[in-house]
Amino acid sequence: MNQLLIDIIRKGIKKTTLNPLCAARTFTFAKGQVPFMNSYYRIRIIAATTLLCLSWACIRGQNAILPGDANNNGRVDYLDLLHTGYAYGSIGPVRLNATGGPTVQGIPLLWPAVFPDGVNYAYADADGNGVVDWHDLLATFLNYGVQLDSVEEVVLQQGIPGVDARLGFQQSSSAFTIFPGDMLELPILLEFSPNMPAAVNGLAFRLEFDDRYFEQIAISTEDSWMTSDDGAFVFQTQPYFTDLTSTTDVAITRFGQNPVTGIGPVAKAGIIIEDDLIGLLITPADTIETFIRIKDVLVKDGEFGDLPIVTDSIRIVIRHPESLVRQREPQRPQMLHVFPNPTAGTVWISSPQPLLELALYNNAGQLVAQESLSGQYSRQWRLEHLPSGMYVAHGRTEGGIFHQRIIISHHP
Image 1 (cartoon, rainbow, N blue to C red):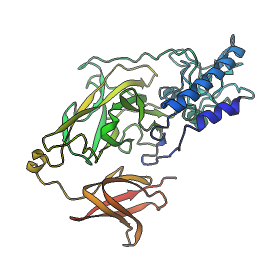
Image 2 (image 1 turned 180 degrees about the horizontal axis):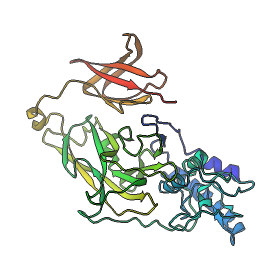
Image 3 (image 1 turned 180 degrees about the vertical axis):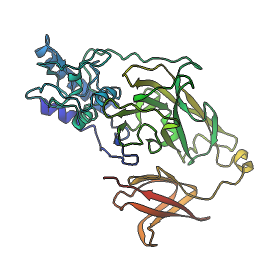
Image 4 (image 1 turned 60 degrees about the vertical axis):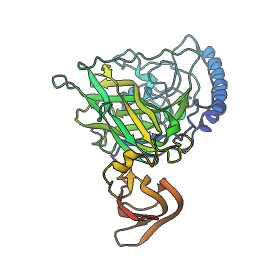
């Protein structure tokens, strides 16, 4: 039964990536492949949950763990990573014959340590080896979305505007006017009142948006004050579908009881607008109004207490490429836009004109990568096979060649 359940979950996971841009480890789910987010895997998760309930019935009456469910609420999700991160490096009793797979398992001996919210540290030891380490963070990734028949929802503290901390966009609810194929970088700030600064040990949140209008949304932490010292783990899912919107889950946790304070962005959302909106933007006067919303936020302070948080959203107006607004706006710099930059290897390239070819040259002027295109405004480019260093990208269009430097950085 264990192998069957592990197989059910692993088939819903496309890849993992390590992002050393800020020496923080990052996991990413592929778009649409988070196990519980589409109908096919929802059916399989129901089957897995049924087997979990049978396992639960066998050990009812004793303490039990669903590996990856570090907060012990009955579901494995992004919030669990804050508990695992806080307990990272802790040691306790081993669970014999334990696995990190999605099966309910007994806990013969609880650990001496308890989280401030009352959950025992044993629940952070997903694989049962007696130490909270990298493998326990991995268990949340592998078992993501698995839940028991009874889930106790985590109560998230809502902040009071002007009083409590705010997790929001640097632009503070401004409306952007942009065009198909454009790229935006939206810094996300965790801001505290001047007289109430706080150390942060973990941050988890969701981005909600209308997937029809966005080709790509990705979170970068290269400039984050939470990850600048090698002491943090970063997790995110690619967009998954819920009702009429899409959502990306994000978690940033420190390793151990190691809170930090800082000013400035904790993350950056890189956004590429779909370049094919012809059916929705028919005439130059047409516009599309959409949004990106931050929601379901949990912030843990240095004592692992919950901080009340005010959330934010931003309004985006997409205009027709031939809109009079574009004709009247100042000429934009003619260059390629690269995100993220620096990169561990995979970047999104955006151009002010349709791209016909991409070429990459190293510092010696040697051509090291080349790709032909058919008029796209943006493109994902995988460069992880190249060594660390400075490169120059050339984007050829009918209007000329645009340039941009790219830094590839592979940390040990």
